[in-house]
Image 1 (cartoon, rainbow, N blue to C red):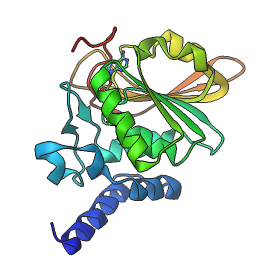
Image 2: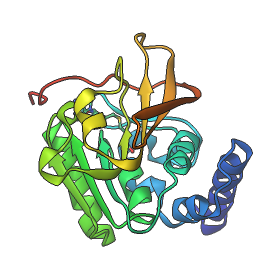
Image 3: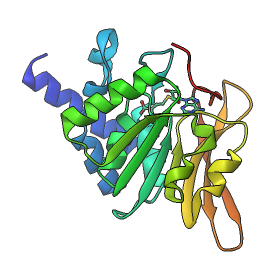
Image 4: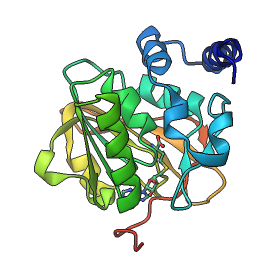
Length: 215
Ligand code: SAH
């Protein structure tokens, strides 16, 4: 691709994000800084700047960029936050988070995805991300509590261990729904009194699956 065509695509990418409701300047800045093409390999790399989910390894997908932007925005991150992401996938969402928070722990049930994502984080110098192979439906008790939790696979309900590992004053964003076709993105705020829920929009994610992947 010529440099001009590349710049043009990146401009359209940023425009698509804005027009789909990603308006937070810090989030947009992070998404401009992290090149999505690095996280998409093979046949689909040429489509990295389109606002659509794309296949990665292990039958999983890298999320749609506007959804990454909206979820990041919904987390209301502060630079001091310690964040848990469940569902590393390509590592793209974690890389965006790394620009906006102090420390990111990201877990995936597929060892290969974690290995590849960690290699990319190292290459890009994103030193505040730690990627681990784990069943994220149990959270990451050894690093809890978290200021923010983001789940990038759909659960039937917000998993209890994740709610328990959210700090008072913390925010969790999680897609929930029973069907594979329509889920709602939920934001949970933990207060002194309990949990407050609000529904943000309809989304579609791969399911949260228990246990470690067998490769
Ligand atoms: N955030 C990713 C996209 C995630 S796709 C990105 O930016 O590319 C959803 C991921 O969740 C998949 O990689 C899948 O392996 C993972 N996943 C599903 N169930 C899980 C579980 N119980 N624990 C950890 N990861 C899980």
